[in-house]
Image 1 (cartoon, rainbow, N blue to C red):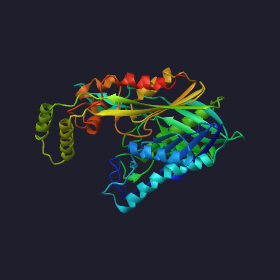
Image 2: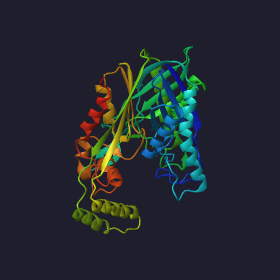
Image 3: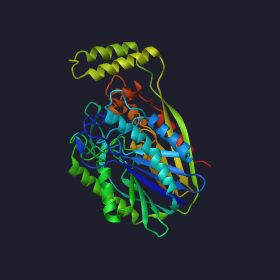
Image 4: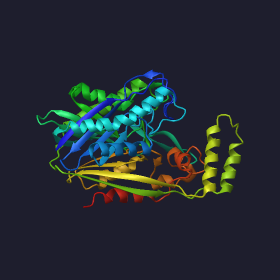
Length: 429
């Protein structure tokens, strides 16, 4: 087995309004990075990329993957965004209203991802791979039902979380660590809302902690797991709290490295599938009219985006085409010893818990936010709440439900089994 790594600073310009998740940046607290790890068994190289960005449209990822195939021949590229909310998102084409320095950054970012994969592939040297896990929790489930059964965003200490950090350690021939790929599931929102500075939130501090212990010749790479319904704690806590959480996660990674197991299998198997997730029927015009009338009870000042959303839903209803959501699923496997599962969107943590319980492998890692981000993908139990499902799983006329905002309706109950079947299909010989 061979592996190579490359890293590039991708910090955006200050005073930027790029993307929804960073409305105004007044400076840089800590730099953002894109990192590429290429695993190569001599026949089926796989590129794993992590970028300190909030999100990215599927087209950004598909174009990057195409350029990587053209430049390197690598067929399987998995681009994971850490989902830090103290950074902008990525676009394949700069928006018409972007400032020149913002356009330049977007264009440079589009070139950077293929460049670092190409560099990592060229840097490949013989290595050994080692997998491990340690207990870790930097956040809490963020979905809590109120007295009316309506889900609100609040700390739910009894809710599901992914209580571990998964680690893949890449060692040089002399046994020294080269790359530490680690995965945990929790929204990096500890800083979001408390500062206008750009930064990586808790994942950046975790990387710093690992480098403190192992040295600067080691490249720690964080990947975001299925953290759609988990917030880093405390929400809006500021940089000091983010540092505390990140160092806690970094310590857990170091603990995991103490008990890693060497992966003996030396042949990579990479598989991909795409399934189509159905949505609930679009609202009728009568339901749309009622929702519009209710909105007008309020002063529309401050509700303009909701009025715009209603207008977009009306056009979708009139067009008459039922929305669907394509979901890409990938698996990279080494014998029965190790498997990486990746999923496109903001996936509920229960999917990662299911992979861990059902995958026929000694060690697993599960990434969400990989090769495109568009909306939340909940489990059936939460989708069944309907309009009471909250931000991540609510249905029309809950206009702030993310699925309603992006799909103009909600995902249908029944998708959970489809997703699990899709994942399991990649494990079969």
